[in-house]
Length: 303
Image 1: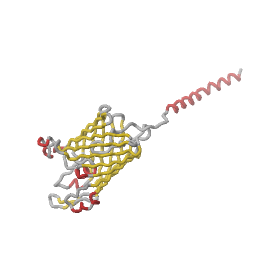
Image 2: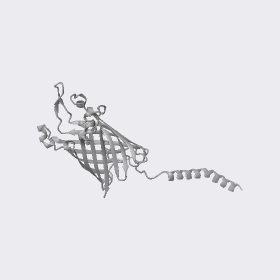
Image 3: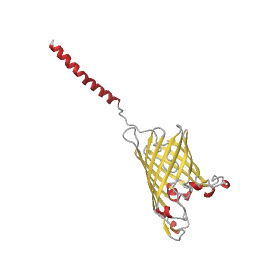
Image 4: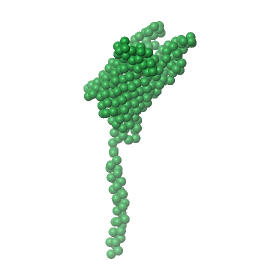
């Protein structure tokens, strides 16, 4: 009788170990093996003024029209006689962006402001995932030229009308409703003009403008959201030059998705649409009614 009792004792002692192994196997089986990218952080490639981390899909073509009216307030040139800026067109931009891969795209556009023609490249370095990857990183590069020679003979040299813009966009999606981004950037213009301030002191604009942008979106419903962005420029010239006051671009808007279209209705103090224009040249102030009504509409074609 001793042998069966010993065998039974060994069997009962081994049960907890077997149960523990089975539990570990179950937990490992339940742990997801795939680490998927999170859903789209943004619905479109731009907020109000800033670019987002959104990309055109591979073999997709994004056709976009962006319109910026004049200032609303009378102190900033608006008022009832031009229907609060609606009779004025500060800037219009038509652009095309093509997706080379899921994480890279190229684009070209033309703006009314300074007749600017620009080309850009956008590449996604990192995509936010459900586990272990909390952020999306995108780099943006832009080169632009204006055909306008202005009143300065130095603009006769076409190289002096070139400008370059680079930006790193760091974004995160917080649940289904909230998205946020941080965007350090640098703009370089080949020619920086020398001017004279009100006291007769010579002042020289910087060739390089370093700036930091923030942007966000809050979804009210699945198709309607609120958007905003703000860009601070680190510029001694813009802080101290007095005959013309410079201000940081700030914009708010409503985003509406309707089928294949994404429609933005915006308010911003930036007259230009492209960074090469609005970073160095924003002179309208929200406090004086310098906000401008605008809209962006995009349509994506998939080939």
